[in-house]
Length: 315
Ligand code: AFP
Image (tube, rainbow, N blue to C red; front, side):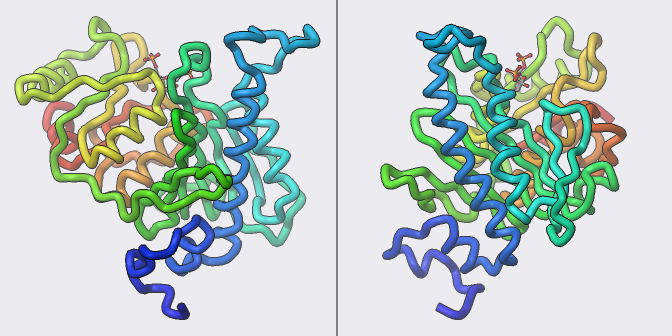
């Protein structure tokens, strides 16, 4: 099995687990080990979600102790797993106000995290997720296209699934009963045009040009799919092979709601690796130089037709 570049499908008779997949794709060892470490951490975060059981224990555990908010717990779990891994040079997340350098001089990678995106949905039992960006330099050093080497998300839903890319396509794995991540969708490729749209923000706050764009898609019969969770909403577009997610700039928030570094760059990396696009309506998400950790941006992400159509109305 020396030839790493062979199409992994030649091995369909084997269960292709995550480590084998990354090895056969020829991904360099430290990056493979980092992606694996984060995927394993998703199991611990999932256990925390179930252990905390917001429906029964409320915001206090059975001992009456105030429970740390789940998104903060998820951040602590990620930091504990990455700080001493030896692969991570620095870490930043939506739960922190700065980049945390780790004493790992030989390690290469800067990790960005939205540890538990959609945490406000936990009590509704809707799917939520963890979003990860992997950079060869600080995420503040340059635009994503120059710093990013990988991205992934983990979806905590009826199944635990993990989607990753290290620059050689976008692939989905499902956590099986044995606790292995097994390849389920390889080289996900978005169709030129989809049939679903996922529309964030309040219609009454949309800018006229965005409303005109949505009305064109409505006229073409797009079906609305919006859960309020960025990870499952993006995941649906990738797994259904097309469509568009947008959280636009509005009258109240011209920069939109979503965070460039923690939410938009990773999803843009995955979408582009799946043959799709991601813009702020004008320029590629991965061409935007982050101004701060809190940099927010409008987003149009998904199939080429829908994202390019947005550009017609917004530039
Ligand atoms: P929470 O993490 O506060 O639940 O917000 C989720 C989110 O950041 C993102 O996952 C959704 O796409 C977006 O907000 C939903 O925003 P609206 O609640 O305004 O629709």
